[in-house]
Image: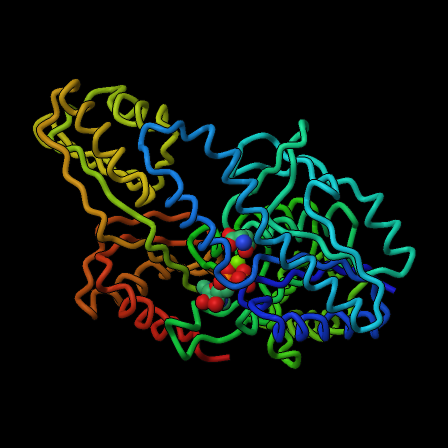
Length: 429
Ligand code: ADP
Ligand code: ASP
Ligand code: MG
């Protein structure tokens, strides 16, 4: 008998019919002899609805944001609370023993950074006690409570992280993330029909894909899984036959496998390493350039210091080679920080005597990811050639050992993803 954590996302729990389908999946795992802890998201787009209600309620722009964040968490956490109660009722209605818990009831202890709290500790005694008694334990994702008992949420898409954190705390055999596609694909299957479902990925690759915009898993969930070596299996809520995608280290095959992981790990062992595993993209990007900056030591920190003081995260940074002792300095930030960053840099540019600041929030970041890149030269050339064949201009480039990212104009996104998918033969097995 294994202990598994099964997480079901918003679309998978959108109505009573779907919740009954979720119950089927849970009962299947039970029939296979497993103990099951279930983590659920809010139903459908409920969290978005609650966010909109909060916007309607707060009309004054001078209202203190820090005070509102605590109340936002009280509001947003209700979405998941509805799902846990309904799912437990459905399970009980089917003759099962089931018990629902909010994050604070379990004691998922977080820090006090409301709306983006970090999980510090999870108490497992109640869950283990209920499991021993034969219950299915249903836990609300996305939420916890700080040391003072204030309700917190852990960031949008955070139920993935709740599920993996619970799996780590309970030393579960695996964490199954059930969603509305069959697994992790070579790229978003809603954009590229030819995208192929991958049978296996390493934590490292999945972390890059998730951090670079593949919405299928929250990056922090993958971080947790890698840190505590919890295998993640991404599965479809709607297609019980699909084998899904296993995300694990090679060594995690030592862990007790469930029936499905057996099949996948054998397959992975014989597979040749592909050059790249997937393509990720992010529309949440904006670019700012300070033109005519004097090329002297300390200038980068003068430009970026005030940005980081305002808690704005900078992603890519490019400084051109100086001509005539003057250079241009470009960085990218999240689109939601664009206006504030522009205001700050306009002030900074006056102080340092730069010519002007220009900006563009019509850009996207496109990335290819794969551990196969380590041992193969020429990946970048192939990527740049495919984009140039479509006359797509590359505005910025950044690389790491297992990824290459480029910034391009947003209108070319779909064309670029499709052409790279073909150029790297990702549709082929
Ligand atoms: P959930 O509500 O279950 O958490 P999400 O909407 O957060 O579901 O994540 C699933 C979605 O992720 C899919 O519907 C798909 O459009 C998107 N997605 C983006 N990139 C990928 C990818 N590489 N593989 C699979 N799905 C992806
Ligand atoms: N309900 C939350 C959200 O929509 C958390 C989640 O679904 O993972 O962001
Ligand atoms: Mg999600």
